[in-house]
Length: 546
Image (cartoon, rainbow, N blue to C red; front, top):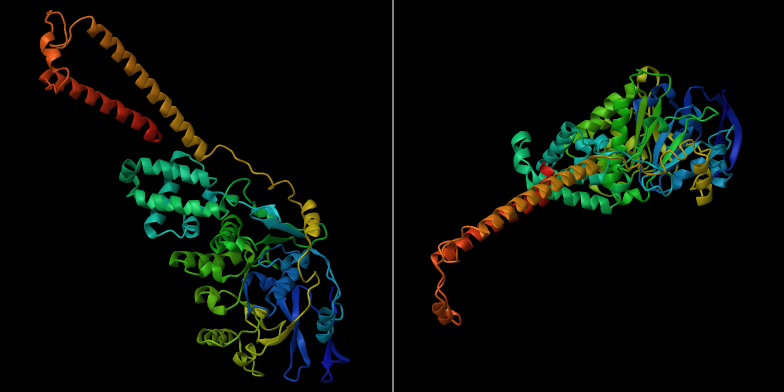
């Protein structure tokens, strides 16, 4: 339903609201972002994001404290009301308030009056809380196999040789039918590769034990940082973040990321994995009337910091092609320079909050941000960017035929949900009535690479022990037969020759020279001991080879 929007002019220095003029109608099929201002501070017109261009991606940038989180919440609410599911990371905990109905506060009602938002009302949105650690939301997991070698190598900050070994490990697992589900599966496979490195290198290329050792150490670090919570089953189903509620609102999936941010690489890799899964699983839909899902990537600079070229190319590919799957990706970051130009070129809807320009890099960021907008003859973008107030932004969205609109200086509308975090009790209430309650909250540990390799090792050890027992039994039987018959000369035997007792007594208290026969006996004993020792080592360390 269309809603009334009226222009209100600020008529005095104290900020009092004057008479109401120039009513507009909010349009269906669009998200109301806010109202643009004229140079004299009067309201110009409402600013929208057209839902049919919502899958053309977007960018929300600005310095800390300028209002990015509120803008994210406004967009998420708008998509949800339109029936579009949303996934967003909650870095500071503030976004969780979207699950609660908003409360009347002076700064919210004042902004609504300031922009002439006559139909402003508070609302509550359907939310599913997620958490890799299972503390502030439902557990969210994936498997090592679903993560894939590229993202796993990124997660471990692997070098090129180590990345090669990781790729070989995935190849071996595929050929041997070894499911890689969690960290212990991958660690067991690495142990197997290390013990059989020579043989495997002839089939797959060089497998360096040094590289394997480095990867194992990286796995240990990941485990200490909590990554074992992320890998396992049941793995997240994409359909569970693409739900709609009974009232037709799109479910908003909020990932608790305050603790996750202690490991930025895990945070970035997880979100990139989720994007990749969406890209691979969702069917082509072309250009729908509204997105099938909108994905907000907060603190986007973490994705691109020190990222290898192959990973950046992967992100660019996903962003470029995933829009045909009906998915919109919105990067949220402090600086537009955080996003590579190849990715930046794919982001059609932009909201630029204030930037500071104290350093040369910050000044460059201001110029870059200004140059990406379609110019407005009424003001200079570079100058305005540094003077924007909190909750104010330069806005340009795609309009007719997908062309960017002229940039406008815009006052962002107030959210309908709560601004600020929910309480622990409120969070628990939301989780207790969640549509995914009980699906992901318990771990499932089925037989996989770890159990399969352990079973093979046990079987090989038992076979080796049986073989040794048989050899020992045969050796004892052979030895018993020889005791009753022939013995080495000099130790008694069938020839009846006895040692010289007097000579033996004469040498018993002093040094006795080793005879040729004694030397031969010791050599035989050493050889037998060496062979038995090698058999034991093969049984313990080489059993996985079988």
